[in-house]
Image (cartoon, rainbow over all chains, first blue to last red; front, side, top):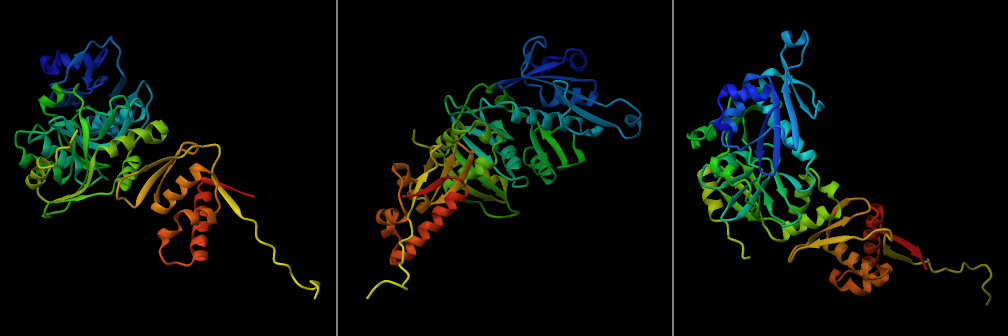
Length: 304
Length: 108
């Protein structure tokens, strides 16, 4: 059964009772909330996701609720709780849906050490994965959203999970986080893309989430072989450039961008080395999405 | 003529360098690259190192060695620099590796 088979009332009712259990790649996420916009956000952004019975095991039990008390009337806020523990300060009430996404990232990043986790978008074509690590503002989510609107499969826009067993990228496709100008860019570039409510004045500026393509959700149990590591940089109107990048420096950058490289110890080093050994590494500059997508479609297919 | 009143120059004891004995270093290096990565499980730290440091570590993984021994193995790659200058540079590099706990030394 998928979320889209539930009515809004049924989604709301599940959220307010035992929770709604979403199957997202290797995880089951059980969400509880009394907030209508969370129900609407799940109905829109998670429509294609399989459901699991709430009574069964879930990896993460989270809730998104407004704190009680007088303050709730003066300046409404919203809290994220994980297993009853509230790890963050409350955010303004209107940020409930982004908080669900950020909190889920936090859960996976902090409690999922069966994989090495790298802060990078990751997409797939023909069985091969391209990792897009990058500092905030580098344009990786915009590029990722553009690519998945043109036939690449979304594996994740934030968290690249690599399994130590088969060395493959494990998909965890979730809504793509768009910020500031990139919201309009993607709306214009991919008019059919479903984009959730636009939320202003967050710590990241104005944010909105783009629904994952249904096909990416459907193929969430199909891993991909890491083949390219592309460090993107958006520069207004710049021509596309794809330059080979040193593997040693790429290793250091991925280790830096990893949530748990240090926790995994020598296993993390070996897994990251294996990944770098088998990937071509590039610095990539782009100024127009169409040209960027052409460049990605022309990436050399690895010999393996 | 006797030696009274003259200072006898003592040869300074040579430092013999070795990989820190309580740990094993993991190296990663890729063809045609001038830099490599070294990981020390003991501390959990990872460093980007230049090619000379990588070659020094490989020598020390085989056995302990002085800067002179290392010079004898890889000195030629420093080009036309005077021997003493290269040995001094190797000592500097080894001191840098010592600071981050990758190597130790003893006197023989």
